[in-house]
Amino acid sequence: MLNRFMSRPALQKWLQTLMADHQVVAPVRVEGLVLFRPVKGPEEVALDYRNTTMSPKEWFFPLSEAIFSYRREDNKVILEPKEAPQEVVLFGIRPCDARGLAVLDKPFLQAPADGLYAQRRERATLVGLACREAGPTCFCDSMGGGPGDASHVDVLLTEVKEGYIVKAVTTKGAKLLTSAQVQEGETEEPVLAGLRPVKSRGIVEAMRRQFDSDYWGKVADRCIHCNLCAFVCPTCYCFDIRDFPVGERIERVRSWDSCQSPAFTRIAGGYERRPSKGERMRQRFAHKLLYFPGQWEGVLHCVGCGRCVTACPVNIDIREVIEDVNALPERAATASAAEKGGDGRA
Amino acid sequence: MPSPFVPHLATLKAVQDLTPDVKLFSLEPLDPQVKESFTYKPGQFAFVSAFGVGEAPFGLTSVAARRDGMEFAIRRVGTVSAALHDLEAGATLGLRGPYGNSFPLEDYKGKDLLIIGGGIGFAPLRPVINTVLDPAHRAGFGRVTILNGARSPADLVFKEEFEAWAAAPNTRLELTVDRGDGKWQGRVALIPDVVVELKPAPANAVTIICGPPIMIHFTLIKLKEAGFADGQIVTTLEAKMKCGMGKCARCNVGDRHVCLDGPVFDFAQIKGLLEPF
Image (cartoon, rainbow over all chains, first blue to last red; front, side):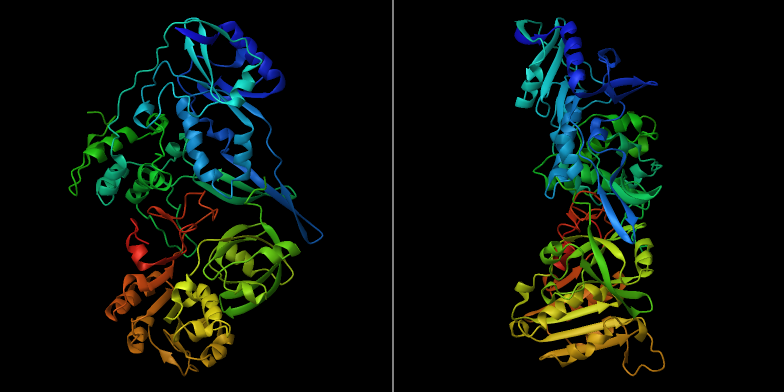
């Protein structure tokens, strides 16, 4: 088929050009993990990964950062706002993770916009890489996305035999491509990842129906609230804010948090909204599959990247939860995922 | 783009003991422009920073139109409130907000108001009372009954204002304590029992009730027995929160955010919440 494409050497050259005048952040192999890291040379970039171990959300909403700092001077308090972030090219983002950023945009860009997040989004150009191979826990196409979904990137590259099919999705993307050697020519039909479907249709209504089910307590029973699910998630955005002294200054630090933490809702005086693991587990899934779509025109708060499934040390699997909740008879709850144990796929 | 998390600086103009563990803090923004533009309504809250310790949300207990400073009645109960209690007038604090909805006072026009507060729960009710009893607005509302209860006489908040409230036209002030202190001549009774005694008429009336969950639970039963419908009973919800702007995903009760959809809810709305409040 006739396509605009970039040969493999042309991609390496383009990356080199980009690195000369942009900060480029790309997947890099680090001690057995694949992580988004600033890169200086094209040889550092990993191109043969299924997906990164951590999602790229950390480049927009870092794990922990000072959102501003302050110091005392002669009995006065001097506020020191954080410097504006620099322009960045995020190379190699997967369509699911780009969709994850679009999901994070909802709460963070809602007025008043979260300053640092908004600036980073504005100053980032996303070069997406379509997925030719699915990871064992991938299910993006059951959550509204797809392995070749170009909706939330500026440029989409799809690997074929001849190199990469290039799609300039936005003006920003087209501008970035002016320094690339893109040609028109015949390429093979791209083969995209095949995914195991998850029966997610009707999940929002099913979540509402099963809200009071004893299912949640049963699934939560084995949760050790390690919070990994939230930390690897491209859409989880719960955060904590605390003050930490750093020398003469004090930083007000925002850090990732998780609704699975036992003290997450505890207020001064001791009242806790969700004292049990079951209530906290229900909060996680209800936020993703019921509250968020209710607040944001049906947008699910899960993009099907499957990271939480891989990360969970006790095999709590959101794909099973979705199918279980959808399959639970009205008012008469069972707990198949909880009872199956093991990898849950009996 | 300014970060909405960076607070305004404010001077602690005055600190006053209200009870053994509640102080009234009066704040004034350093920047005259902020001082002018920082307006708010009864029921709204703001984050106050105790620099060096952190910040927490507190209900505004003053009336913006009075222009006599922003006031917060804060009980010493957590880390930030304890740090605030240790401050003296003249200290610099951080302030951001206001956040949340407010009591829909326009909807209460022409109605009788029963205002019930327990302990520090009375803090968000004070700006309602001082707005409604303001001579400029008083005629717009019906009969006002104020019920202020606390564990002991010493724990009653806003004692300095009792005289003015009791003297306001068509207004009744009722005080009650769980236990007297030897000198207390007034009522010793639990709030739900006082509500029964007051025989409030539900016709064309609204009840606003704030206080500890146990007090709200039992008072609600009595109000329902007296014929009040869920939509006629209004309260404020409290929740752990970090942002006040619908971003930190911490204060939700079911699919509602206390920071955006609240803190003011009526019980018809609360009954529709998926999670217990």
